[in-house]
Length: 238
Ligand code: FPP
Image 1 (tube, protein in one colour):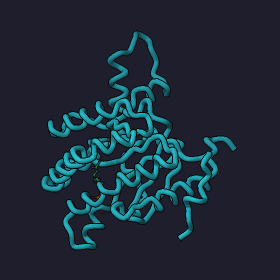
Image 2 (cartoon, helix red, strand yellow; image 1 turned 30 degrees about the vertical axis):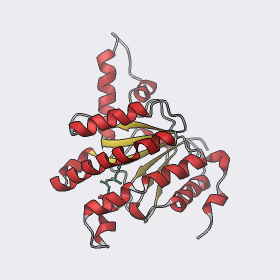
Image 3 (cartoon, helix red, strand yellow; image 1 turned 90 degrees about the vertical axis):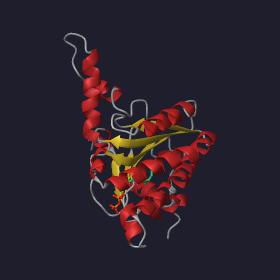
């Protein structure tokens, strides 16, 4: 395989990468393992991906970890995911803090188990002073709901006659304060967006790879960024 890392243009590294981490279930199935094992392996990919992003100078990574639609999965799989998130927060917090990673959350807190809410609030607070890179965990997240929540949030403070604008929308998204999303990667050979970062992807480049998320490695990230750098981003211009 080509050494994509060497080929990267350091002056055009994406500021914000969104990742749809798909394929945990299929990865497990081909190994006769449980879907939970697939998610566990998937969770182990986060740290090396963050390390590679830090080294390249990426400023924010958004990970689609649990969508609002995932509530329709079997109860056992959902509770396994909560246990995994809990384990992740308990074991990785010091590591995240040490690496200068600032954790933020995108999604609704409403249906989350109280323990997860507490752990999330804790990790967000403890990493708030970190400046190297944002890790935006999209948990109980839906792109359409994000827009609806943002508009409602604005409506609550709306002054008489005030109009809504794109700028105001951006200020009321979960990602307010994060850099513009430049690149969205989806693993596992599915060519869909599945309600992820709908507003933010307006001018993002999309890269799809057949690699299943638990097999995703730094070299696949370099390849995705390389592909991104081959594109000509015109933003509607000619
Ligand atoms: C999609 O694969 C993946 C998920 C629904 C969960 C993503 C969660 C992780 C990667 C693990 C943990 C994350 C954190 C933040 C600790 P799928 O189950 O839909 O796979 P399939 O399409 O092959 O069935």
